[in-house]
Image 1 (cartoon, one colour):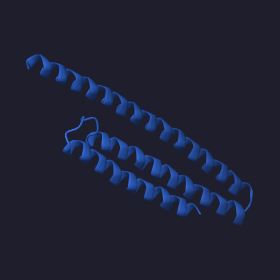
Image 2 (tube, rainbow, N blue to C red):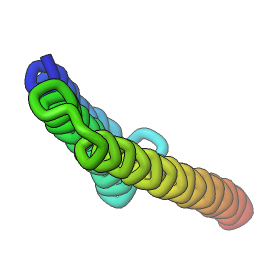
Image 3 (cartoon, one colour):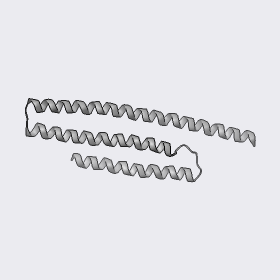
Image 4 (tube, helix red, strand yellow):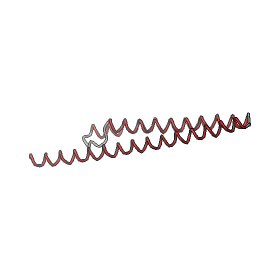
Length: 128
């Protein structure tokens, strides 16, 4: 069950990678607004990579936790299970913070690109 979830997320990651590259290449080659470029794509890929790693790590941790708790149920194993869950929650918090940081960078990058395009169009209008 956990492995299939991990493979499902991996499939989504690969599909999003291909889609992002396709969209970026389409926008760049057809001369549309240069909002999406390879730097934005790399931000998206890094973000998706961390989400993928979090889901896989969470699945592996829970699988090991259930195995330990079901096959050797004692106080030490229950403590290890609780410790593993705490570790996963800490990793989840770090992951969410990183995703918010990447989203902030994307937003700032988008705003700068829009300002640059607006200034470029204004200068082009003044010159012509």
